[in-house]
Length: 120
Image (cartoon, rainbow, N blue to C red):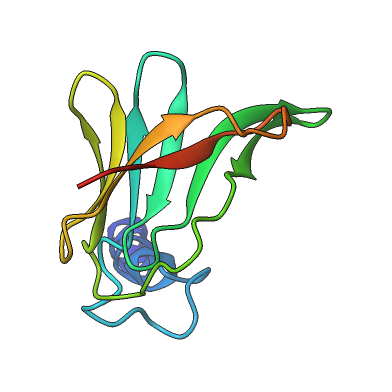
């Protein structure tokens, strides 16, 4: 009987530790802030509020998120403003303005990922 009670207390209290690495507690606006996308070449992560993106890369200690070249002039908004979509190629879409960027190699020849604007 004691073991069942103890097990119940442990299981009940374990949910309190679920957000121990998120402080302060996230607001409803922060839920869904980050999204992952797989494009066949690798994985991308997007901050859906700011449009910042990262690509999965290998470092000496293992896999890491490497930041892509920043797009100047992006306006932050609510979660979901920016989205990675598959349109036959990977696009970064601003769901508020409709502006779109295509994944491309940086003109400087660096080993990174950049975004090139798609003209309206």
